[in-house]
Amino acid sequence: MRKSAVPGLHFFGSTTRQVILWLRFGDSLRICYDLFALAGRSAPKKKKKSVVILPGAGTDSEDGYIPCGSPSDGAAEIPQPLPQTLTIAIMAVLSSMSHAFDPSPLQDICVAVDDSMAAVFVNGKICKDPKQVMANDFFKSGLNIPGNTSNQLGSAVTAVNVGNLPGLNTLGISLARIDYAPYGLNPPHTHPRGTEILAVLEGTLYVGFVLSNPGPNMKNKLFTKILNPGDVFVFPIGLIHFQFNVGKTKAVAFAGLSSQNPGVITIANAVFGSDPPINPDVLTKAFQVDKKVVDYLQSQFWWDNN
Ligand code: MN
Image (cartoon, rainbow, N blue to C red):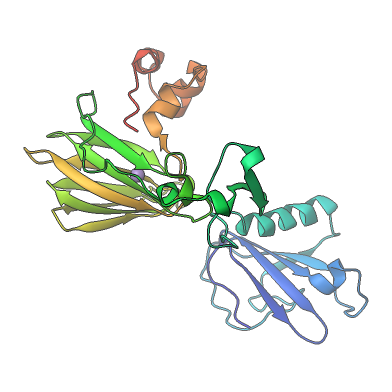
């Protein structure tokens, strides 16, 4: 079996003697687990686990299945006892992968309802009794109406999610209309639970998103594009992104998001406008500025355009 070359991914390989799980942490650390040994089976006589430190950050060129304790690239090998905490950590990583996004519905509909007396439980969620469900549970109007962009950002997001369209419950999708005044900005923000696909209907937007930290002393990569009516752009889940109306006229866009409740974290609001405020010493050091700058930023009113 092939070993994934992507850091962070795991893979399984197997022989008659071993069932192997490899975990990669960046380019420099791989941990190999023999699941036979983890399960207490006596089949293999190999080591239960070995930690492999790759020399430097070289390319990972091995293609084949690598048994535990047999690194093919001459890397230094440090056999270690099996710590329970690491086992728990690995199980946590594996289980979190299956909960990182909205779950599969398991049924046609599960209309969200607050009244638990009028509800049935499906997959841990409270669903409206299907016999009580109406077409209006899947319906919302008003997205033809522009949001009010008379604010310091010059933008307004009108979200349609499970909070105001209960039929979206468990379906892993939602929608937003975004209005921009001339030179209005939807400021840098992330959606912790959803990818966003944006379509421009009117106006000209400068949009972009920034990748995760690439590694020590390397800069986060920025992708940008100028969008015109009819253009579509994707902001991958969790990444910081923005849209700026660079035209002299108003702009309108619609966005689909891959969660019934994607969430929004506006960077400036979260960092400088939290309640209670983050200790200014933290921000002074983090942003490498004079404390007066932090005091000024924390004293501002941070408008939430959502
Ligand atoms: Mn967004």
